[in-house]
Image (cartoon, rainbow, N blue to C red; front, side):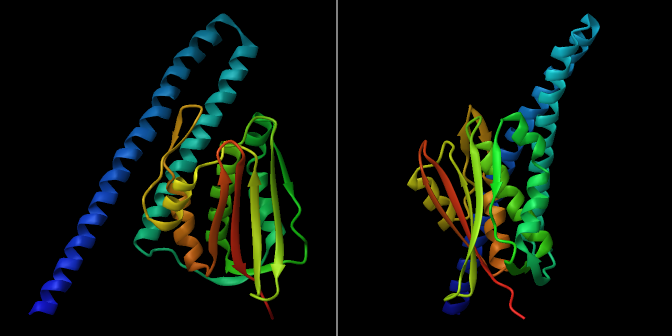
Length: 248
C-alpha cells in the first residue's frame, strides 16, 4: 500500500509539473502570436496609405518587413506543432546515412532572404566526406532552429560559421554553429541544457520563446546526439552537436 501511494504521489507531481509547463507555454504562445499579428495589422493599414500616395520605394520596404514577420511567425507555429508531436511521441524516426554538408546547404538556402536582410554571411566549411547516422526530417528541424537562432541573435553585417570534424575515438561528428552576436549568460545556458523550462530571450526588445531549443533537445536525444553550448554576453555563441558518424 505504501509503495502504491508513493507511485501515485509521484504521478500526481509529474502531472502537476506537466500542466504547469503547458500553462506557461500557452501564456508565452498567446503573447508571442499577439505581437506579430498586431504588427501585421498595423503594417497593412500603413500599406494601404502608402499605396494610395504612390510611394513605391516605401511600399517595397514595408512589404519586405511584412514578409520577415510572417516568415518568423510561420516558423514559430511550425515549432509549436513539432514540439506537440515530440511531447506525444508522434514523430517517426528512421536512422540512415546523411551527407552532412548537403543537408546544411539545403537548410541555409532557405535563409537566403533573412541573411541578405541583415547583411550576414553564412560560411559552411563542412568537409564533403562526412556522413552521419540520423533521421533526415528531424535533423533538418534541428539545423533550421539552430541556424535561425544564429541569424536572429547576430549583429548586422556579421558572420555565422558552420564547421564539422570527426572524433575517431568516440566515432562521432562534432558540428559547430558559431555566431558573433549578443550571446547569453551562464545561468541561461544551464537552464537550457539542464531543464525542460522554456527560456525567453530578448534582442532589440523582441521576445523569443526558446521553444526551438527545447524542441532541438528532444529531437537530438532520439538521434543519439548531444548538444553543448558555449557563450558569453555580447561575444556570441557556439552551438555544438555531437552526432554518430555513419559507418558501413
